[in-house]
Image (cartoon, rainbow, N blue to C red; front, side, top):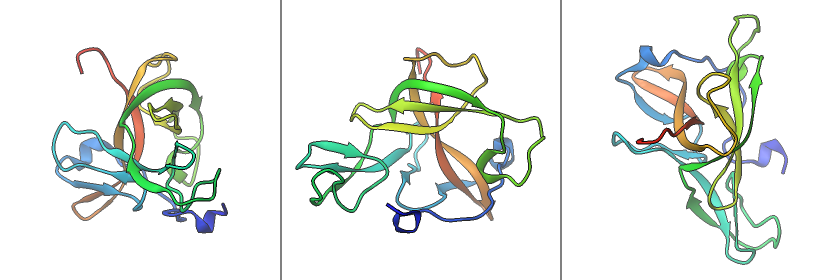
Amino acid sequence: MPDSARPGLGAGILIFIHQGDLAMAKQVPLEEGYLVIPEGEGERPRLLGSYSPEAKKYFFPRRMQCPITETPVEDVELSSEGVLYSWTWVLMPFMGAAKMGDGKAHGVGQIDLPEGVRIQAVISGQMGDWEIGMPMGLVALPVKKKGDTELCTFGFEPIRKGE
């Protein structure tokens, strides 16, 4: 599907904002159609996907029709926890920043959700914090602030025992 036809894709430069600067801001998705951020404390965000009753498969991001059967799909909220399939350490600007060289890097992982969907996303932590097969939880990542609102994309963080 061309980028122009995919729901929620847009252009622009994003600025990563230190989370400590945004303590009281309301979090909202950067773009509609990908993510639901609950207002309650302690609840994880949810990714929005599609389910094809005909193919009995889930998809992310949302689809207009099943790419396998070309039949209608249902919008669904996907699980907010999964398992780390693979990860890498990326030495490049984060979220479309205009220049490199600030010494910052970040992890990117592929997380398998229980529905059978594999999601690629930023993962929080430092190199060495992750192990293949470990449980991961969805988080809202602030990328820009507008007034009292944090515009967020999604990422994952390790789930430690007892969390």
